[in-house]
Length: 220
Ligand SMILES: [Zn+2]
Image 1 (tube, rainbow, N blue to C red):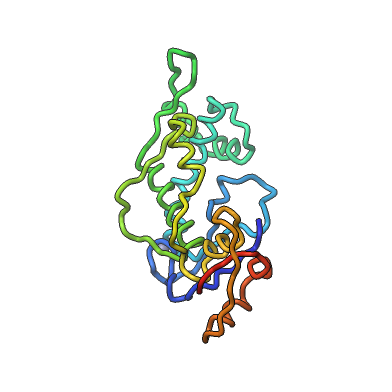
Image 2 (image 1 turned 30 degrees about the horizontal axis):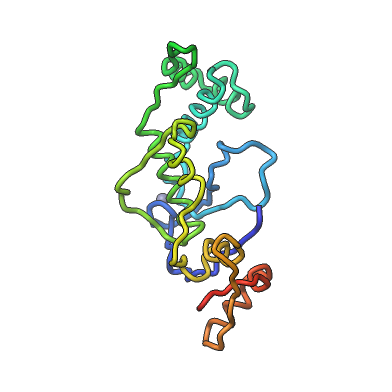
């Protein structure tokens, strides 16, 4: 993955990504349990306290196993070696997956989900990406959390999900999301216009060269 540093105000993200307490660990978003080795370079890493870091791990393990079991339709024939190892080392989790599995009339395997656990992981990932891309900590409860199998989305809903909405607003200056917008052609041709304002010049010098080279127009 392309390496991008955040140049946003470092007062925007304080402490642990999830609870704001002091941090003593770092963690990947997405969690490595959802990825297979060899990992891509420059995986997003965020500050997290040990309590949050460890507090998610069992739910993430469950979530990763659920996704893989649902994908393969089986508990004992999963394909990802990492998940196979987890299920072998944790007979209780494997038994739980077996209990959750039923076969529909059309012969397809269906897994009953433990919604509280899935919600916890989905929300954790969303909060992590918000910090990584937008430098925004979102500790408050969201108004809605939705998770459904991708193939069950209606075409318009799937298109909405896979294509981020365009907006006239820009993310916070210096965030990774702002840098991505600056190099993207999705928002029309743009040039970063350098203004002789205190602070702006230093900021532009800090931007990756790719940002400066783009023919994009950003009023700063
Ligand atoms: Zn925490």
